[in-house]
Image 1 (cartoon, rainbow, N blue to C red):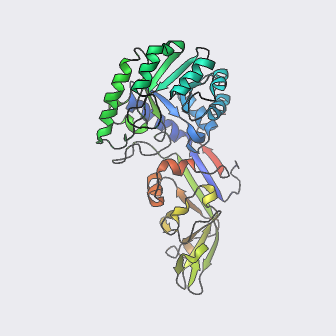
Image 2: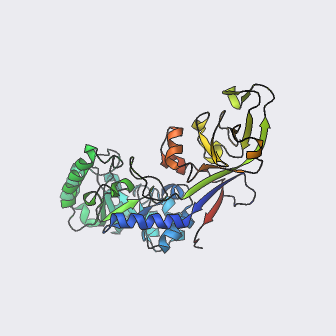
Image 3: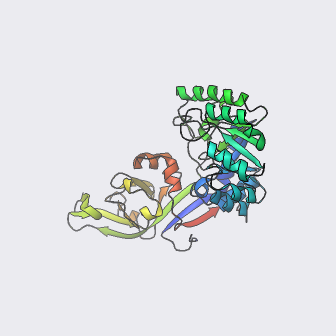
Length: 363
């Protein structure tokens, strides 16, 4: 990871906006507690600075994907509650040694934790309609009959909503109804239902603990309506070169775009190796000196070309900074143009990008 300096592309992370979003989520989820989902290096933003700031704001529980992510987070927050979503199979000993709480998703997970967890606490995930990970009704019945659940201490019962970003989807209510059946079989165990989108569905969709991810990082939790959270990420790149075409010419690999004589082309120092989707070729935009200008030609590994004819030579100069992602080029707009979702845009942000953390940085 490079620091700022003269890097051609810079990822800025506003930790004050992150803290404000955490407060917004806490208010929306109350009285449920809020745990932060810091998978994939905190959605590409950098797990260390993000975790430290969230801890300073009062967050004390976190979810990560793997034991490797859990061990990394443990070096930053040695005493926090850290849940490992991928479970205990192949990782039980490491989880127990580091004080990580595995989320048991299958019978193999349960068996591994009983064998190696030495009675340490674990969370249990049940499948209510995602059909991806989690114990089903038959699995729970077998565990009850065998007495396996008495061999460790379940500290959280969770499920994953499949369509929470679509408030009217019938599966939302169906999943909550199915979860209530499981909940009755784990009396006294705290529950967790809602992801970021589920928080705004209402109290019955939340449980005792909500798992906030994309909303903390500025992504719109619901597919429609205003975004209740602030932008956290801004990706910028410098103009490296400007060229006035002396004749009709194609731009970039494959000659996918032809520009007329007199067109003004600017080259930016960022590309798909930095996390800019190649699918933005000939369809995306950036914000430069007060205007949205189109990406022309293919996004290459390190460079992007823009048609800045409308800005003119006086309106665009070498060294100017273009916004590829940020308040004016929102996460949702960029994702839509790229034919993907905001989660992918964030988690693909490259470690080679220079990082700039603003706001109250905890060291």
